[in-house]
Length: 568
Ligand code: GLC
Image (cartoon, rainbow, N blue to C red; front, side, top):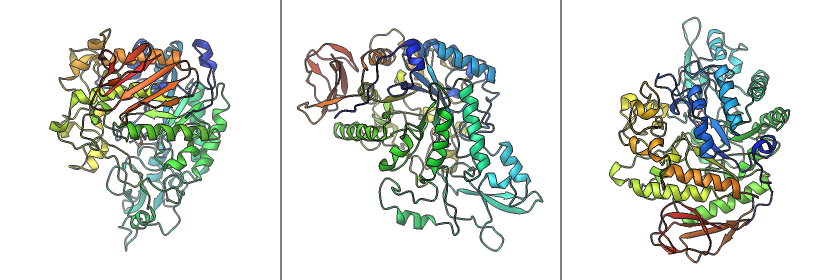
């Protein structure tokens, strides 16, 4: 199996100008409010990130992806945006942003901003104006307003459900105080969906893309990229009819769903591409699109966003067959679309992989359904969790991923081997998934707990004023300072692997080798770089070669269970 596009090894200023820098980049996701707090208010901020640029440089990543940092009431962790062209005053100022961007660039690190086009927040001036304006007004046309059904309009326009649970429609009170129209929100009610058939919305987003690109942002991560355009022709199709039409396991594969993955969405991204190409090097983008695998390539097309997340490994068990099938298929898909593949195990929406892999098989699977099912989060009881095994497998899986052609997306804290935090009292939870599904889903707060930088001190070195989500006592063991320079620590494993990755990654080709065991995957990249992962329970013999790095201790000439090694 090989993926043929090539990439010269570039470094320093060459890399800054290289239009292909993203193809094999390692991208580190920062969830700003939980990364580092410079002013002691318990919330991470922009200056906190700037202060940690040396840490990021030493880690050896190529780019930072910043989750939303815009003004927000945090009804959905910042994915409810009040103003697309500003910085949340709780996080800093535009000047702080520029300073951070300059510091990252000086360290040779690119900057990717998260952009949230499907919905604004309900505090956005547009939505406030829509509430204050009459039915049928231009202000209401920026969103999706409908009259309700029933004698007095008291029944929602359709039975659609929000991804976070509960109805996808909310009724408003008209300016004259009477019960009024309903607006659509695929996510929380504080996140009204924008009307992408309105030219004004399209133009305003082009302005936003230029605004951040002019400020030096190198690329964008596009939030729910597959939801923007909708078919709202009356009568609205009911959820019962929708599930009858959706016979596949993976969502619609023909663009016929009224709001997920419609073909028209690509007209939007074709316009975005023109804006990206105004810059040198062109700005990049990666789509968060939970779509049928057969439709992912459209988002990743060079005429569109250029790259799309593939969440297949993230949804897989720690299993050799599953990994091999997913890798093979995705590399083939990437070749077809002209993009490079994307790999990811953890992000701010899912249970950390060190925890998933410590749960019984199948129990660690998490996905975001596109049919209103929302995130499936582990409800597995604590006694079923094997922390040590989870971390061992997570390290092995990551070392395998870092050897694959394509870009690797890492989530803050995984380089510390952090586990999901389960012990958050209900009263301190923040995720709307929890509030809209009380007792069913615990939500995503467990992977968003502020990072431990030091083994002691207020909030483990996150800041001087506590942490906005409670950190458990066991965070001490995972702190940066507890792992820095410690041989065999997860942090040192990531540093070593990322350093070798930069050196060894010369092309996008890879080749599978017969490993002699169904539990072992073995592949090589040009230049004699080999990767072997033992997914099984018993040690296997190592192929010949110099050991560059391994995810756990080796046993003489043997590769222990749940371990990956790089050889040359
Ligand atoms: C994306 C984000 C998630 C957010 C949702 C709504 O899936 O990753 O965190 O809640 O979109 O914006």
